[in-house]
Image 1 (cartoon, rainbow, N blue to C red):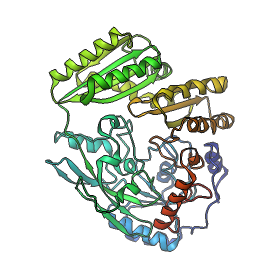
Image 2 (cartoon, helix red, strand yellow):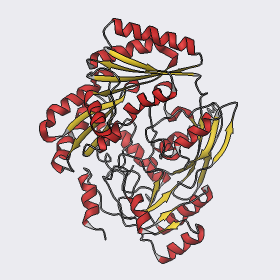
Image 3 (cartoon, helix red, strand yellow):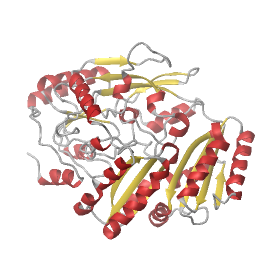
Image 4 (tube, rainbow, N blue to C red):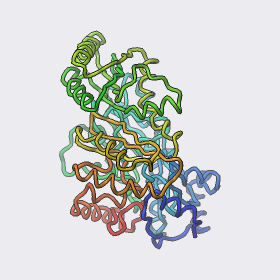
Length: 486
């Protein structure tokens, strides 16, 4: 039995939450088994469980009464084999930094945390391939690699707490996708445990392997619905010798796109990031975080990063680019950073937008992929459509890969506002053949809206794959379409 607060919380997130499926309840015998398997790592303390039952946004909440903290793949295997036999529902959890309600239980699923699976297993200094357990925190991996003159191909604002297994399970995009591509290209191998407890070892360190299906791709972006990722092999690039960051202002989104076109042409191989935020984002940063806008006020702001091996060469290319966009009046003002402290300060303007939004009220977050010319039109149309129902409607994101983060704030949770936003935002996105989830995944919040981006035949095929690998729907049973259990 669940208190009204749980269901109200989940329904207020705009989800038609399904009834609890007929899974078993955790018994004293089950607890005894887990305590014997994981001495000191079988958690029933309500205070500890509280933080694992609530997502980072505090928008959805489950009622799990058991948290398991395995340290090895073998322990994960034994847990899932037992749960499969006992028909106990399991919710995998990494750093719990997700934004779509996929990292916490809907009801009383057992939470399986990978936080203690945090060992780096190997690193090849020649190839740049790192192999590590799924619970390694992204920032820790980055620090480890930088000491060895390499970097992670993935960079996220949540890097201080997100875990690489969760990053891979959600196919996280981040700030460097323009330069290094998605995790689907940089992840070379995985180790995965299926719902049955079977261990699949795909931890290859080969860049080329064309013998049959690339099965690891099934689990990249699967959000824990097909199996639990326990280890990862990733190809990491060398640390660039020269890094420059330019923070620029544009008077219109049209000029921003023209600047991007010019940027790709003139900076080419050294361009590593092209991010944007609108003036509404900047006002929130100034108001709530007391950040100082380093340039003149503008309608749009751009963060451009270059990363290369020759400082003089890179500075010359960047200088020529800046001269060109200033002379053609595409950019009205700007500043450039080459020192680490100033680079971090400029990046913080873009990376701390999410933090500023949390101070502005309750936030409705949407992660959309669209054709570049349509990205900001969604923000403008949403402002006009909502009118004074919303406190703020802002847009920022990754221009380099067509990813808009649309954020809408209100003074408090507002079901009427939620219903005004959805499904309008998804219908608008579908009209222009966009994706309702660019990098955040479906989770609980978008489970009912997949049809706006995927054809029914594709959804049916996902259902078949899900049932083949997880016939008892043990993993994340609620984070699926009501009648199509993907």
